[in-house]
Image (cartoon, one colour):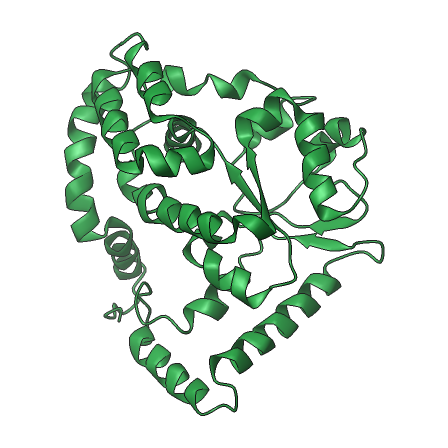
Length: 302
């Protein structure tokens, strides 16, 4: 989509997260006391003529101006594709009532496989990312259920199997012309973002279906299959149906998957380690140790 002359974009701007989390007194740990800061901002906003709507209006004005500065003259849209917006998706829809919203779904088993391969070389690491798989997904499905009439929903598998049909549907929703060249030129979209963890994008010369079955090689040991079965049951039939998937089909795919022992030894200790990691917040401890080694003073995060 970013190759279309009427759509400007960057990798993942993240710009809305701190602006909206300024109002949230939970979910942020910082050197300053974020909870107190949020309370103060909430109190300040309460005295504005229109309360939180004034704050939202100014966020909208600020962000739209930044999007405009990051766009060419021909651009009609700025595409903000930031996965972490799953935490604020309903806030965003409220703040930008005139915007267009595209919900992109993917087979949950492929999502799990992608997390394992992208950030930890295939080793078990879901304990560091499962907030996205659980609360994040719940937020996204809830928002789509509420705003389905003003948005469009696309399945990754349909997009890969029938890119022209799916993209034409999306571009009709946007009210701009779809160009067939985009199915070839998209490989020319480059980014120098430090967040870019998708090197495979630069390997393929066109839309490639190999990604659809990759999860079968990553999730094939008994521990992973058992974890995935529990997760699919947690997502549940209703949420999966809204996303365009069937619970029984996903469980059947898992059941027919041949088991092997890939990563089994490391999973045997990494999975239980994940429970400890959630309580100990390993990244925070790691950063404190690095500060200590570097001779910096260690502070409590509030």
